[in-house]
Length: 193
Image 1 (cartoon, rainbow, N blue to C red):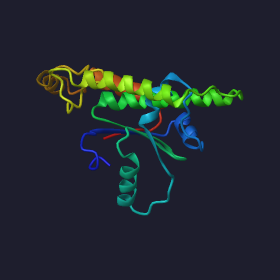
Image 2: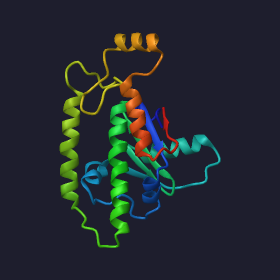
Image 3: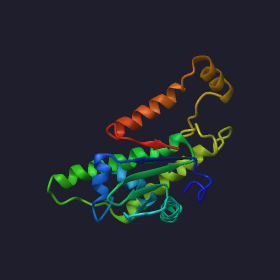
């Protein structure tokens, strides 16, 4: 999948309770909350299948992902992609929160109030435009794997290397990001590549 999208440098795949629950719903993610509305146009779906070869599954995932950043893997879990750790976390956070809110709303048994496609599209475009302006800020390269979605990056690379050598521990922000992803996914297994 990473070969099909060269701008993607990070992926996270989760099996959280709410993500897996939404992946089992025929309608997928619904436009119920601000969280869902901010990412809904970036979501695609991948059907559950019995794959005998990993190459076949990789090709199917890349085909289904297309130009999106989020994937609901039917009856399985969630997948988020990004040009940096920060962007990948941003997408995963909003998708995971959308799933949690959706399951809470559906558990209430009441009829949900859905937001129109026009409102969802407008909100998504505004937040993507703001994110792209931040990404293109002078001095911040899109290929910087340590930049966040709002253009907030780690300390300069030389300093980070020196700290890593001196203390042999990852930067605090990387640890904090890992801990937030773990908390977000209820401590379930997750993979970052």
